[in-house]
Length: 353
Image 1 (cartoon, helix red, strand yellow):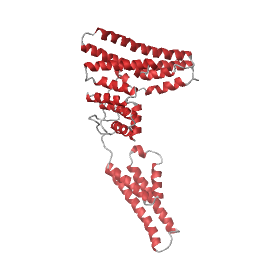
Image 2 (cartoon, one colour):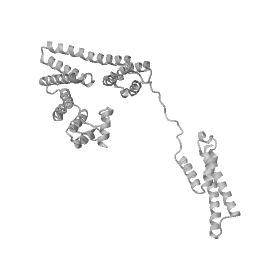
Image 3 (spheres, helix red, strand yellow):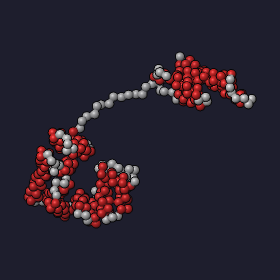
Image 4 (cartoon, one colour):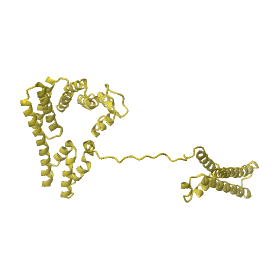
């Protein structure tokens, strides 16, 4: 049955070509005698053209799969295309038909397998990007919105990362609604108290430590906690300056015991950038790199140090290591995913485009 259908389709295509050739012969014959193809000659040429179009439409319709063949208007569309494009239409139709014959669809369906349903993994929730709470920010900034809706949005802010939460809450300290303002102040106060409790515990451990390793561990913990107050923007003014000094002091105390602690060199570099001392920041960051701190995490801060020194060409060279498809920089495999922060990626696109 398949062979008969294929032979019938080829016969229709051959007849369509013959009818097209007959229509062209009539037109060329009239041109050869120097007379325009009018009257009976034109009618005969149009008739042969119509026959060719009908045969081409029938051949193409027979060759189509059942799912396409049963669609309404398929035959008319193909026939009209072949009729109004005398030669090109037939070439297109026969070309598509030839491709279908040379590359037929596989007779056997592709193998399908069953996959297990994905499981929810609770510990990965911390890695889910929240978009810095864009929708929640919009709801909170809408002063004409309902009070209950804004309060619900502010409560939902607690699910965001701590830095985003502190930024949003601090913007609401001057909100005209008392409930929103008090809740934002309570959130900031609670975040600061949690860190301060950890600082008090770490200071007690530091005071009672007998071994140098324990004391160095306590100093590292205190430096990180004081830096967390700055990173989350929980301190301002003189308190921020004092906190920065304490973070630097405990970082230096840690390095006095363990000079190869790359994280403390990195922290000192960040502190120097806040003080706008780029030479010291670059020196600390290079020390962190020497002690095997990930280079892809250092590149943005080295670029900031170069920016503070107005060495803009160096900024481009450093951030070029984080651009997509970049080569390895200083032994680190650079990629766009090395630093997932949208702010860093925006800076990379600006300086490397």
